[in-house]
Image 1 (cartoon, rainbow, N blue to C red):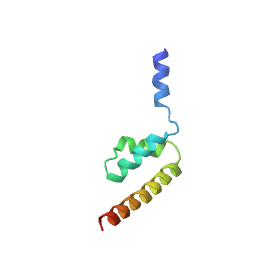
Image 2 (cartoon, rainbow, N blue to C red):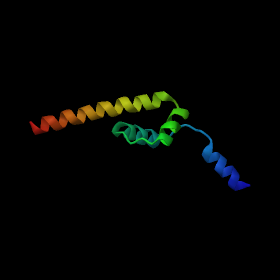
Image 3 (cartoon, helix red, strand yellow):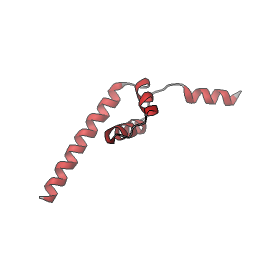
Image 4 (cartoon, one colour):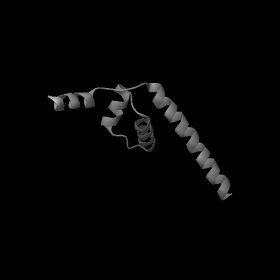
Length: 73
């Protein structure tokens, strides 16, 4: 009986954790996001967390590229 309750708790949708959002953002950015994880992202949590993570990733990526270019030149 306790095992059934544990399995149900794992399947209940909840708020995605920080590392889950970061992992999903990085996987989506390089194009290796699995359909299972993509469906999980769309059904759980707030889209604003993923939008914010995408914007932050984009800004950091651009800053990294600009920094590397300035170091090379």
